[in-house]
Amino acid sequence: MIDSVPITLARVFLKMHLRDRQAIVFSLFFPIAFMLAFGLSSGSQDPIELGVVNNSQSGLAAEFIETLNTNPLFSVTEGSEHELRTALIEGDSKMVLILPAEFRDTDTGSQLRLLVDKAQMRQLGLILPMFEKALVTVERELRNTEPLFSLTVEDVKARSQGYIDFLIPGLLAFTLMQISISGSGFNLVEYRRKGILKRLFVTPLRPRDFILGLVLARLLLCLVQLSVLLGVAVVFLDVTVVGNLAALYLVIVLGTVIFLSMGFCLGSLAKTQQAILALGNLFIFPQMFLSGIFFPIDSLPKLVQPLAAVLPLSFVANALREIVTNGSSLLEILPELAGIAVWLVISFVLATRLFVWKEVAS
Image (cartoon, rainbow, N blue to C red; front, side, top):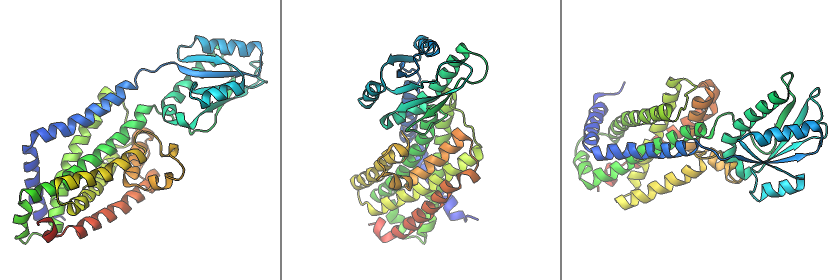
């Protein structure tokens, strides 16, 4: 049970924060605007630049290519495999579809090859599902019996969701980190500047109670803000939460505690607002680009991937993404939960060790 001291402090910190209405508005406005900008911009897509290598030269292959040409989803270019591979490497094409020599009749199935460039991986989360659906439509126009072909994707791990479905959980995790760091580290420096910590220093208040009280207050605010963001994603961006909401919020709570504790570490080390701003950026921005928020960690250089995979934001973002898009249960994300648990212990121990009244109150 939590004693009355942290709860009382949490109420005080909540009242202090709620008086700053401008900070509340901006802390909600920026993530919502960021989310809507990404979500709405991914709504309309240009035709997919598709190269087709026709190794069959049969009537069926010609009919298949003509059907692709009439589909507004594609911008088709025919050529040799060498020419189209070169175009793919140079960025003049998104994909190259290779029709095998046995692609001649509708009685036997054929396996098509789809060539992609790893540099295009971040777009494939959106393109590949549409491409597969379009191929099914083409097949149905050619015949309505057994499947005519199967699709083998080379050089990329296919994703069943669109890019916006991949992006939203990552943005939730990133917003969670930003709110938490600013809610503990920046506030700690501000309390020092205003002399609040000096007043608390002469009381019998324990650092653990102070940290716990501020964590409880910020945790409640973070849950409310992320609930608003999630509601905006569901209502305006048509994002579906496939998994269990209780599991989702458990991960959010654990992630919030991690980054609130990390914020305390930074706030204890920093002596001025300029210092906490610099330390905050050093902590936030590398994780923003390495933790799979905007594109999969697999697309990073192999040398960086092991480091990126063990960052705290990576564990939180992956867990949220698995629950939101794949409907995974807590048992199915045990590796992510184990990583979150490790960072939870590390961050809380560091926060309590680095937070010394004589240092922070000076």
